[in-house]
Length: 154
Image (tube, rainbow, N blue to C red; front, side, top):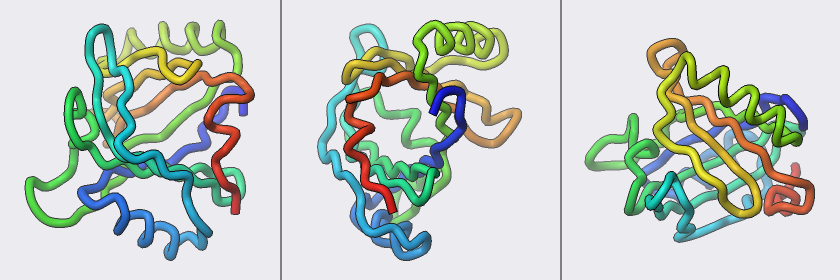
């Protein structure tokens, strides 16, 4: 996984419905569900979201429903009312923390960093690349044996 773009992530207003729709569309048998997950988003900040993860071949799909706290970055593109699922970000994983930090420093010279934190034994950061590409980019670094090992593959 080192240095790979391998995740498509979506935000939604209805987590269960989005899981059903994406599973049906992409022939995914099910998701690792993380309801009401509270996680750090920066120093002294947390958010609560529903998360779902699954692989189709080597591509990981992530579905996020923002619930409360510092979750504004996950609300981008969603309507105030009604159902919607929107593409949100590409995810890039680094197995090596030094490599992650090097790429993080380079990306910070180009894009705003609205969220960055250590969580679940790893670290992650979101860059606001919407002006250039129309979406966010997430860099993350989690060691072998992290929660990512439990994500189902289809």
